[in-house]
Amino acid sequence: MKRDGRADTIRWDEVAVGDQLPAMTIDVTATVIVAGALATRDFMPVHHDRDYANAQGSPDIFMNILSDTAYCSRFITDWAGPDAMVRKLAIRLGAPMMPGSMLTYTGSVTAKSIVGDQGRVEIELRATNDLGEHVSGTATIELAL
Amino acid sequence: MSGTSESRDTMTFQERLDALVGTTLRSDDVARGPDPVNQPMIRHWAAAFDDQNPVYVDPEFAEQSRFGGIVAPPLMLQTWTMATPIIAGIRERGGSPVVAEGESPLTIFDDAGFTATLASNSEFEIDRYLRLGDVISATTVVESISTEKQTRVGRGHFLTWLTTYVDQNGDTVGTQRFRILKFMPGTAA
Image (cartoon, rainbow over all chains, first blue to last red; front, top):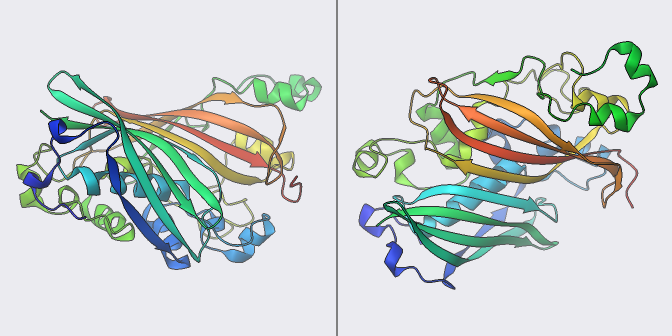
C-alpha cells in the first residue's frame, strides 16, 4: 500500500505488538541491482560487472548493502507513512541477492514505548529470495503522539 | 598508524591487524561529502528504489510534515560521503573507488591476498534527517578485526568499523556500525 498523505501516517495508538507489515516484493533484475548501486554511489564492480563477480567466486553480480538498507526503509515507511521517522535500522546479510529472483520483505511489530513526546515502535523484518534469507534485521521508528 | 616499518617486519599478520583497532580507517581521518545534500541525488535514489515517500521530493507536502521541508531518505546517509570514484583502474584496485594512500586495514588485507570484500552487517542510528544544503562529513574508526575464519565464500577476516556522521556545524546526525568480510577468492569451504 502506498501512503501519500499526512493523514495516512499510521497512529501510534493504532499499532499493536504482533501486527504484520504488508509484504513488499521486488522483482530483482540486473537493472534493479545496478540502479541501486549507482544511486548509492557504490561503484564496486561486483555490483555491476558479472565477469568481475565471477572472478570473486560469485555466480553473478549481487545487490549492495546500501540498497538493502534503502529497501528496508522503504518497506517500513510504505507501511508507517511519510510522517514516521526511522531512528534505527540494523541488518545482517545472509544469502546473496543476484538477478532473476523475487525478493519479499515481511515484518512485524515487536514492541511499543513512549520516549518524550514520541511514540516508538520496534519492528523485526526479513527479506527472502530463492536462495533463502537474504536480510534479517530490526528497526525503530518514531510516530508523533 | 601504529608501529614503525621496522617493528612491522617482526609483527605477525594478526598483530598488525590488532594494532589497527582504534585507528581511523582513512589516512586523512575525515571523509567529507563531495556535494551538499541535494534534490537531484535524492530524486535519483528515490527512483532507483521506487520509494514514493513524498517528504523526499514534494516540497509542499514536506513543508506540512514533521520535517518542515524536503529531507533526504535517512538510509541515504552513507551515500553522501561515498568517494567520487576514479573509474579507470577500479577493477585492478579490487573495487576500491579511489587510490588508497598509506597503510590502512584494507591495503593490509589486499597485500596478504584477502582481496575480495563482502558486506555482512550495517547498523544505523539516525539522530536527525538531513535537509537540502547540509554538508556531511564522516569519521570512521576500526572497532574490531577478527582472527581468520573459514566462511561459506572463503577464508577471511571480519572487520568492523564505526562511522560517525556530522553536519556543517559539527553536530552528529547519525552513526553507523558496518561489518565486512575481507576474504581470499577461491578458498570457499
